[in-house]
Amino acid sequence: GAGVSQSPRYKVAKRGQDVALRCDPISGHVSLFWYQQALGQGPEFLTYFQNEAQLDKSGLPSDRFFAERPEGSVSTLKIQRTQQEDSAVYLCASSQRGGDMELFFGSGTQLSVL
Amino acid sequence: GQNIDQPTEMTATEGAIVQINCTYQTSGFNGLFWYQQHAGEAPTFLSYNVLDGLEEKGRFSSFLSRSKGYSYLLLKELQMKDSASYLCAVRDSGAGSYQLTFGKGTKLSVIP
Image (cartoon, rainbow over all chains, first blue to last red):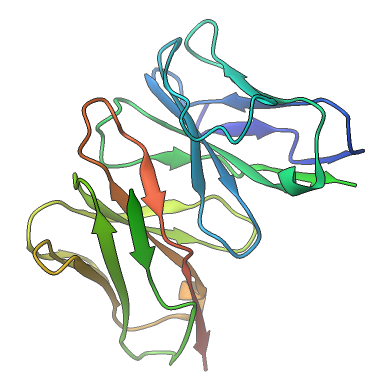
């Protein structure tokens, strides 16, 4: 595709529900990142993939957060037993290589946990 | 760890010049980035500095001083469409660590 695509654009979940957020990176991009952006804040790093390998998951806030990229393209961020503090915009970004200057971001999934 | 500071909000007049400052304290450094983010949209890449000095790209310029832990983004000939948040971000120098640490962003309002 022309850019990074994320779905759904908006997600409302009841506290305790599981959610799955999808990211379609730019075709051929090796590196994929997930970031969490709270209202009025900058994005915070969650996890990084190089192809299908998850090389850094140091930013995942708890073991309720899980990310995968099984075939090295599409990635899914799963949040189990959602809590109100999980409400944020979840941004996905990709680049041709991890050390590239430019990250291409998707428009994000806005998650609201009630 | 990383600590990045930038002003929360700024206001400037259409046609003017504005400078957005960013200071950082990092355990490692492998580049400083500026991104623009319009409300409800994806951040988009503006500039990258890894060496000291000024990088100019059209109406936008970015400056870096590694010894001072300081950068600024300069926007010239401001247009209404430049109203957005401007995010300063630093990349760590750790091996295989390509994550960016972002500041909280500076919300710029351009007024007529």
